[in-house]
Length: 141
Image (tube, rainbow, N blue to C red; front, side, top):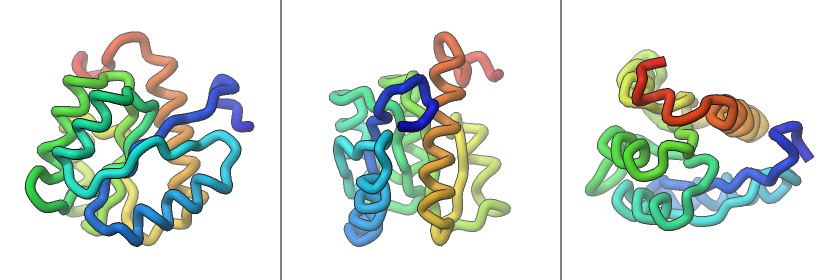
């Protein structure tokens, strides 16, 4: 088990591509400390799952039908401030990372990253979120 306070990390996958969600689920199933607790194909369904489950982290795509990832970030922050938001997008970081991070995302990864990098980003973001009392994003720190 990872050193993230000895707890299993609950993760919601929010991406409109079912094959990518399956790949992430399989990769996380190989990890002792990461558990996918829900999947969603759009931002609205993802936000609903996050409100209901209050997971430790969400892997969030930006380009989805209906409510996109950038619109979803503030909803997640309002309804589940303890949830770390890891954007996993097909948009290059130089194009969208600044906006996603300014809205409150904890990390920005481009699709195509190695699954071990994604898992490490989840652990790091959750560790930072757990170490920060309250909602640090709301205070701008």
